[in-house]
Image (cartoon, rainbow, N blue to C red; front, side, top):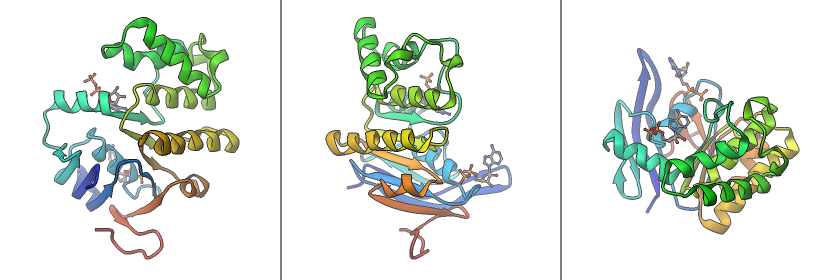
Length: 227
Ligand code: ADP
Ligand code: ADP
């Protein structure tokens, strides 16, 4: 069955409806691109799937369990251990070095210092950032910061990676490399990747594309609501 599923999810901001009976199901190891116009509800859908937002109505399931009805503590635990996030804002601590930032999710768990920093350096190397390991992230460029954020999301070996415009701050070559890395993880390790993007080239790397229009998930080609 599906690994992650939204069933008729509704979510409003005050009186503004952002999702209207949005349904989506993602299988293990799948790379899914979520496309759609600005303001259509893509980010809200991603936040609901990731257990960051609670839907007003509908259900979210992860690994055969209801996610939306889990208590806050268990939902945070699940996010920390099973999910990785590549969002545009608020994930890195600018005063800390790149290595510190990437090691942090491991240090907050049960990984020892030595191993945490070793794994952090491994991921920084895979993103061609080894020379910047000792630099504070507040001093890095947008593209470098974005790649550190990718390393930070991957270091815990999450089951699902949620990415919101992960290549937005990257030049097209670096963006392509980041997508290749994410797709490679899906192929080699069965990591599920859900990526919100405006970039058709990014979407072309995915196994499947869906379109969000006016708070509903549709097939990008047929324009019909996905069930
Ligand atoms: P997308 O990611 O496709 O750009 P969003 O999920 O961010 O769309 O937004 C969907 C709708 O919800 C839009 O109409 C947007 O203006 C509204 N919205 C999003 N975030 C907020 C917020 N914090 N407060 C009020 N309205 C919001
Ligand atoms: P805790 O309650 O243990 O401090 P949180 O619930 O704040 O943990 O978040 C757990 C994990 O989920 C964080 O490590 C973070 O990566 C991710 N996360 C939570 N909320 C957001 C968010 N709004 N944007 C990006 N990542 C988030």
